[in-house]
Length: 234
Image (cartoon, rainbow, N blue to C red; front, top):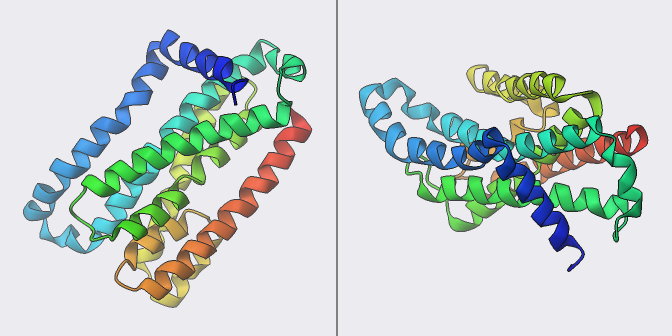
C-alpha cells in the first residue's frame, strides 16, 4: 500500500497543476446542488416532468460519475504523448496493479459523487441499500469510459472528442422509457440502460436486485473486454 502513496501524490499534483482538471474535480459539487435545489422547483413549474424525475436524477448521477474518468483520461493521455507508459515497467509495483490503482481511483470518486447526489436529492425515494447498490452500478461506468478513451485516442484533442461521443451514448437509453415496455429491453445491450431501469423500479425490490445484477454483468463484460484490449494495445 505504501508504494501507492507516491503515485497518489503524483496524480493529485498533475490534477492541481492543470486548472481545467482542478475545476473538473469540483464541478460535481455544483451539479449535486443543482439537482437538490433546482429539480424540485422545476417539477413544480412543469408538472409534466414529474413522472420522469428518475431519468433526470440518473442522468446527472452518471454525468458526475464520469468526471473522474475525464480527469484520469487526460492524465493518461499526457503520459501516452510523452512516452511515459514504457516506464511503468520499472515502478515498484507491477504495471497491471498500477492500472488497477488508476481504475480504483476513478471508481472511488465516481461512487462517492453519485452517492452524495442520491443522498441529497429529494425527487426519487430510495432506501439506503438501494442507494448503495445504485451507486456501485454507476461507478462501473467511468473506468470503461477511461479505458476506451485512452485506448483509441492518440492525444488529448482526440480524447476530448471521444469523451463527448461516449457521453452522448449515455443519453441513448433514455429513449427506451418512451416506447412500449417489452421493446425497451432492446436497449439493454447498452450497460447504462440498467442504471436508468434500476432507478425507475425503486419500489419493487425484486426487480431492483435483478436489474442490479443484469447491469453488473453487462458493465463487467464490457470492462473486461476493453481492459484486455487496452493492455494489448498500450
